[in-house]
Image (tube, rainbow, N blue to C red; front, side, top):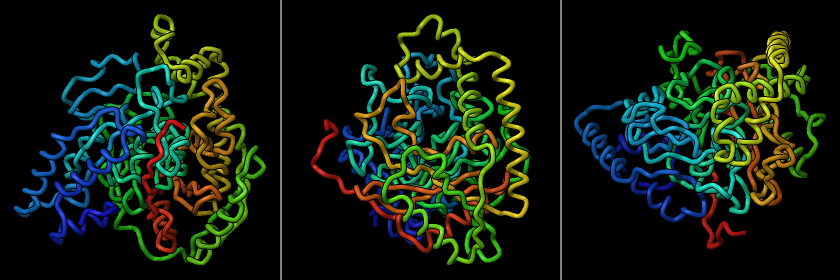
Length: 471
């Protein structure tokens, strides 16, 4: 039993003796052999160590040592996180391989491994988690398995594209402005930007110190809940990590949405481009939530443009601060997309940065006031599907991302889950965001899970064709 399973399904099959961790890993490796190199998911595959780890997890389970729901599950790790198999590259020629001591896992990776997870490889990203792929640099150009001519989104590109293709059952992404949620929407999977500070970011190459977050990516909200229960919690090396107790997120799933008040903002007024299929997909998704018992209230997110702008400014300034020495001495070694964006951070003044942070705090207060009598807010992840790789322009990024609506939620810090809601006329996935109060990650995941009990979009799988990425 090695067909395309969710983490929860694979866990049940393992404990029922219907499969093994080795069989799951071998199936994932076979999928990787079938899809790569056209898909561009991996920067590094750990085939031998993954099989050895799977055998060890099978032996533990046979001996009655059950490490929990992630025991024996194949996982992909975004390559801005340290793993003991090898240092992260951040998909860049710039990063010093010695930035973290060899042989160490980032705390979040160590937690997944201690819970029985099997790391099968390091997945592609945008350079330093920003910008678009640069074909002039020696790294894969990631593609979307639903249409190899399209991009899987970024910056958690490989994790996003690898999941629907079956190259692993769960994975890690990072989210500073939408880098978990954009690939989730474009690739038809589920991804969580947890509350800021809920998951420690130690051992992760930084982009924006006050915005970065590490999040689970998987097929379902239930799988994300299983992963978050392991990933969450403070780490002494991350002073921004929260000391609040970690919940058993999967145990809090279930039921219906009776009594839950959901504010809905379609954000059409902020959408320069809207796919023809999107209004109906969004309306249908809201009706599913209503039918599950939710009370739906139309709302308007305040300071939406201002907070989105503040996010971009803060991210650029913090990235420029980290990269300044290399920007001055190794400008040409950066890819065009990263060079353009990180370099833009040098054009802002200190007062600009402070003012952006002030806008951020005002926005947090206004959002809290708006949510006084709301439990959740639902918005589009993007009103447009995945763009064509050929259309990506590193110096005009918003030309390809004009439908994207993820930036707002990073400066406010609230938990936000992207779930798939169907496909456009060209067969490309699209998704909505479900956002909650700070540290109400459980409520966000529960709403996503309930939605997915009434839909099957998250269970759809792209079909491998003979077409190649040279289109």
